[in-house]
Length: 259
Ligand SMILES: C[C@](O)(CO)[C@H](O)COP(=O)(O)OP(=O)(O)OC[C@H]1O[C@@H](n2ccc(N)nc2=O)[C@H](O)[C@@H]1O
Ligand SMILES: Nc1ncnc2c1ncn2[C@@H]1O[C@H](COP(=O)(O)OP(=O)(O)OP(=O)(O)O)[C@@H](O)[C@H]1O
Image (cartoon, rainbow, N blue to C red; front, side):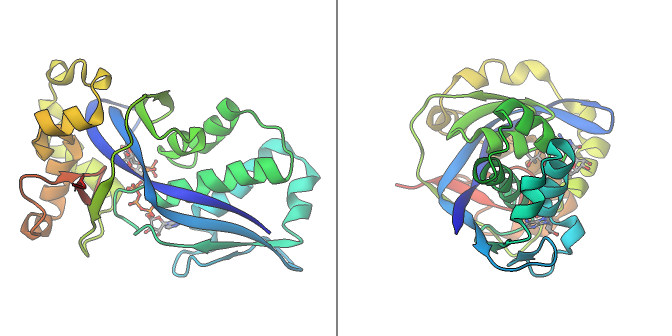
């Protein structure tokens, strides 16, 4: 039996820098959340075909783990991978809420790729694994490189580790699912024309605690927050939508530093 933890992330800040080929470019500080993770296990069994347990409600073909499996299979052409999943099933213990801005599906896929690479001795280097991952989701390169904190840019494929203290974070995810595609579309329609690139110059060099304490305004820190509030106005009604709380990714999770 083989197991790996797939951690959640939060975006300490997230600034959109432009729009190219249907995607937004951004610069963001990603921080891994140490005490919130899904667990992915490869459990021995006789399997007819590749199977995933624990992601009820997500069709196999749209599961990020299945997409990661297909991508690895296509890239390696190594029969070890397919043979392995004739004798093992994938079990996912979900703890990260979905449509929450915490990167759950992306983290699962990244952890799956890392564990396959190790267990099946595929010998794929990290840059190649990140490149394969970026085709499945924008957040995969961060999770594949697995730094506690990093500056992420481009469409998500440029990941630079950032040395700093790990913050202990309190998270609150309201019962409002935010669809990433809808939030980005709303941003493009209402807010893209207003971006001012000079307003966050140098943020990537400032540690996360200082950023949260000095910038302090969740709307300024995360460009997608204003878009999520337009797309999902009920977000503005939750008690955490006030000073002292910050907003992660495309939402709907709010976070703050634990005392
Ligand atoms: C909000 C973030 O989580 C930041 O941490 C990511 O930028 C989103 O990452 P994700 O959920 O993995 O998103 P993806 O599955 O790659 O993309 C979903 C959809 O969001 C939009 N999208 C996503 C990423 C990006 N840089 N620009 C976009 O415009 C696209 O319409 C895309 O079809
Ligand atoms: N392994 C998976 N775990 C959870 N959801 C998955 C998975 N694979 C595909 N999905 C689908 O992706 C959708 C988004 O879920 P996910 O857990 O990635 O949350 P997210 O909050 O949108 O992530 P992000 O931080 O990137 O915005 C779900 O509604 C689900 O249909």
